[in-house]
Length: 428
Ligand code: GAL
Image (tube, rainbow, N blue to C red; front, side, top):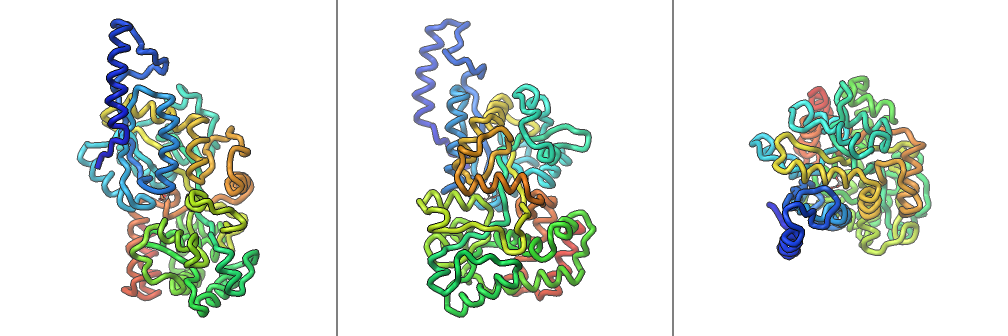
């Protein structure tokens, strides 16, 4: 559904622009030096439809409106965390030759899917035009490029997936030290069980994609970064004993979560920790924006630490924006991409979104304490790719892993069956 957030303002602006143009005569610029032609628009397709995610998008739109006042932003957001509903709908539109002007896509394997299907344009020229060639880390640009070096999207941000959010009050009330450092999952599970025995929701989770998000962090914790990465390049055996042990931990942890999980998206699952109805939640660091939006203070009202067993590892994902083949308003899309890549756009967006800028020239002092820590971790830690957020595996693999996970967590398969289905999914 298209929602035109500026309908009223646009009508008013159009009237003013009409007057200005008339006053300037046919050669007039309308007083705008941005070079945009009047009357253009850009439908921006994302899944940042509500709450703190929409606040992030709104901040970016604020900069876009300043940089490109003649181009109308059309919000094509489709609700559902991690693109759980948006990606299918997008695929239907792309196959029907009805693309939006630009869409959100994850750096890495997910973007490669769109490149392989010839659904997005090479935007290397825009890197030259906007002076972006040296603006981003080389490793990130590699994940946005085809083998021959053509670049296919402009990144807006970098998120970390392996974060545990906790409510220190709930922990203290149940005799658990909120400052406790857990070396591995076993130590953490011991406290989760203690909370569970006390009748507290030890760890909150939501619908399937959030369960897959939890799964990837459990695999990372138990296998370590090298063997975890090997799951995606074929060098780690999905049928092996190490994976079995990790899946056993996953089964234990799922058993300590809220029963209504399948009906919740990430904001509701994280909200249980914000409200003190659950002790822990594993979620990407877009969650920090939800805490901060509700005036919660890091270190007082909530804590944010790496998932036990993943300290020193940054489970990475990045959002980026594309120019689809056949975009109805390529000029509008180009203007949007310019804003996405600009320093001003990245600072405004990431301050509100909880992520860190993809650009390397942003000043860390502009960001929150949590984000400053994330900026440091990103430059020092071992980087691995997120499964649930398109960096590690193609969409088809993620879909098959999600289906297998849903069967397992709803009791429709046992652990051995789950492991075989995961192994088959990873083979594509
Ligand atoms: C991720 C996306 C993030 C955030 C999250 C929850 O896939 O990269 O920006 O929106 O989903 O919806």
